[in-house]
Length: 202
Image 1 (cartoon, rainbow, N blue to C red):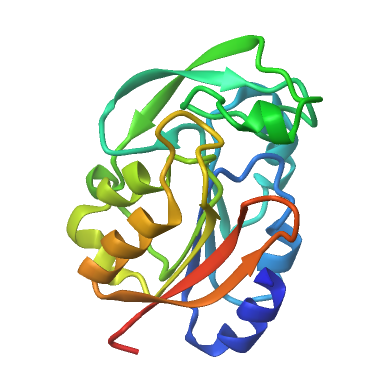
Image 2 (cartoon, rainbow, N blue to C red; image 1 turned 90 degrees about the vertical axis):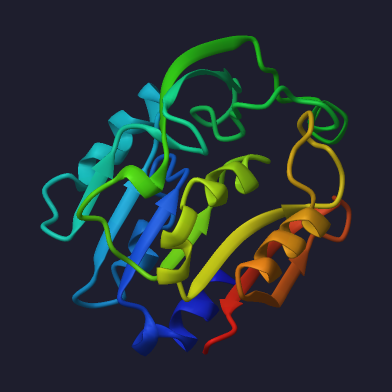
């Protein structure tokens, strides 16, 4: 769904902000959009080493910390699969039921910052892949959330992680900020998926 959305709105996208970039699985898709800056946020040490293969691109900027609604250091619960692909600040809950092969035995201290405090980062397409921490990231944008036109986010119907953001909570917050959910993809056998929120001013 992501590639289709980027193709549809490519003339309206002036920059990408990806929170939870991991090893850069979507970077090649982002690079199809010409002449835009791409900001990648990833706090984990192991995937960062892979992500750094893009550090010599003039339009790609790698930020080695997480985003949230605080400026502090927190503990990340590290998964043991695919270089920590399901790692989260939140503790796993139903994730262990739906994905019993994934274990969270390791931990890592990471830096968390509020987007509102950052300078010289622009882009109107935000992608969130933060394992249930979506609402905290968005709150940390404060008034800068109004600079966004598109927000592409993972959504959850159940608690895969303890007190993770549920889609009804995300909808309510997004509506209060002037965004509406226009596209939704749900997995057939797992109560989670992806959604696109578009600024109503568009």
